Image 1 (cartoon, one colour):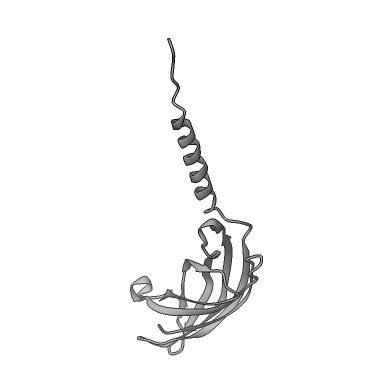
Image 2: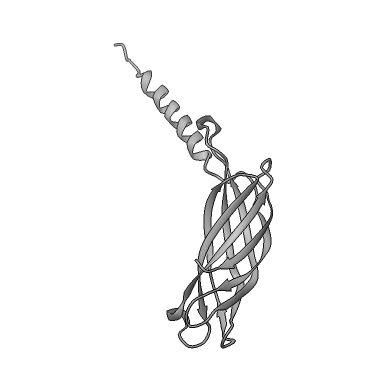
Length: 159
């Protein structure tokens, strides 16, 4: 009695596993994070008063590995933390705060412009219900060879 083993099926399964392993492996971060602290300042207009906002934004960048075989550009995942940013009402002197943390994916380039909107609200009466929007505009620089975030500047304004 002669037995026939399927030869084609193991080859196909092996090829699929190899292809999926290559695709899934490309989405992992390539190396450790880099970060910079960027001074931010500016004025947000609106009712009931203008608010002068200042502080330090902590920006962390992670180089994302992409599939060279698919000709994708390298990119970075940016985490922008505004917890150390606050404001003062120019009429009342009220304190305004934000607890914003945003994540954005950007192509890796030597210099990039990134804008995010964030909520700004009074610590006093009204709190979150009286929140207004602020706009943080960043100019960030990167080492395109390593993907490291090397510096940045920022301003705050009204969206």
